[in-house]
Image 1 (cartoon, one colour):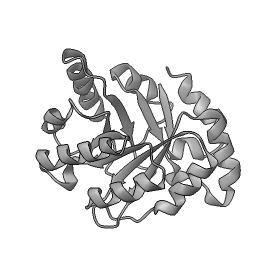
Image 2 (tube, one colour; image 1 turned 45 degrees about the vertical axis):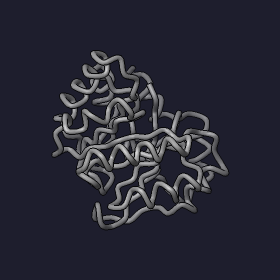
Image 3 (cartoon, one colour; image 1 turned 120 degrees about the vertical axis):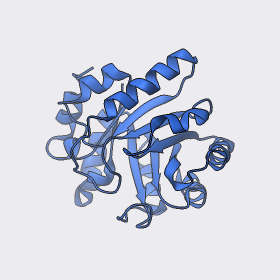
Image 4 (cartoon, helix red, strand yellow; image 1 turned 90 degrees about the vertical axis):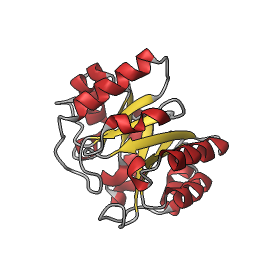
Amino acid sequence: MIISPSVLSMHYENFKEELDQLNQNADWIHFDVMDGHFVPNLTFGPDILKAFRRNSELFLDVHLMVSDPEFFTDVFAKAGADSIIFHYEAYQNLSKCEELIDRIHDKYLKAGISIKPGTDVKVIEPLLKKADIVLVMSVEPGFGGQAFMPEAYDRIRWLDGYRKENSLNYLIEVDGGVSDRNAHELLSCGTDSLVAGSFIFNGDISANIEKLRRCE
């Protein structure tokens, strides 16, 4: 199990203290990039990612919720990302998605594809042979603190079954409303990486991460 705290929920006035707790307890850092167009919110630029890179050796998992993922891929690759995850819905074109996966791999980064809750998971089937990560959104992307959408379980089960049937190695990641109340079932369905924001940062970060670990 990979625990990937979403720093969208981090308290930046306590950056050093909270990042120290992440460095000691988390596996990855999940970094949400929103452009105000693909989703109705604005978040971080590359300089913020550079600050994480300077102060952490954790894997930096960058999730692009943007209308031009190719442009942002180049920007955040230079800033220190270890993976770039982009949305199928940004293109709705399998050839363009495959081209971007290849471009990300050319930068020696892990490449991921994400889908919104309303997108049929099977639409990305042709991309699964190349993807390193598949991110299932269990809330509508754009804002933190939303309630988990249980429809995600069936999508994860399908991805896990497809992975096993075809001897593929992509990681299944889930983001949105993740907590100790649903983590065990998510893991049982085949999830490898749990992205959690509000649950981890509202309270004792180390203790909340440990609560997720006990769900394994």
